[in-house]
Length: 302
Ligand SMILES: O=C(O)CCC(=O)C(=O)O
Ligand SMILES: [Fe+2]
Image (cartoon, rainbow, N blue to C red; front, side):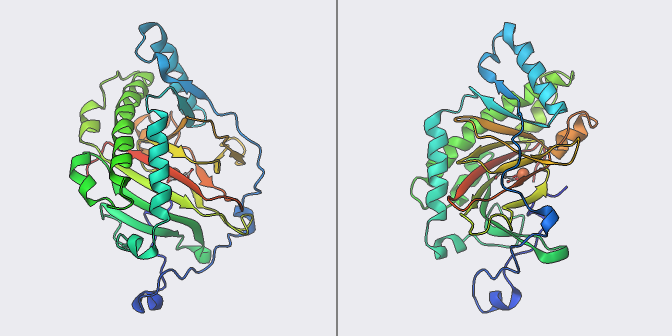
């Protein structure tokens, strides 16, 4: 499945783009069957406490929990993950500051080339109904950090430092999770080590402004991630995941200090379908802008 915007074309009408105008959406209204009812039932998401991952007595239980969450929803939240609160807060606050910059600063990064290592844009569903989704984003490569950080935005002034620290800590966490995930599959903790060393870490910094009619629109359409797995930090609630048993959408409660882990398409393939890439989408609200920072962990090089 698609990642929600990688396959999409650029959301600026051609004539507007020619005239140098920014941002002329087709329509934000999604067809009725695809809308969120804004008060879906919440889902009981497994919370995995990683505190004992290096304790030989506890590791096997944690690995079992990761395995059963990956086989079930393909989604879990993690606590005691080793990324400290000040790093989480710093990344979110730099993300908010970036999206609050004057438009011309952000347009420097706008491109319709999906292979650009740093890219700002909005998402467009270019299929039937041509629905525009209520999201702006900044995407950038993050590993190895030294190869990419100089291409990241210079402003806000603390962006590179805060986002770089977060990216580095998430990388460390991702390597720990990789060993736990492959161990849970019974293929040993080092199965993906070399590939992960070389692999990509792409970050999507998503911004969903408050929406006057959230019942008509979506922040991101239903999709699963193309990654091996995705680690996600959010400023407030908004994610919905699909219950594979009955196709209904369930809201995910936000847990303070937790990070979310989404099983991606690559892990679904690697596990011969035992672990399932979670299908998810983003609902909106009238009150506040929501930020999420998705780190797509991949074994593939560019
Ligand atoms: O904003 C979210 O909670 C989800 C973001 C997401 O699914 C993505 O960037 O692929
Ligand atoms: Fe996603």
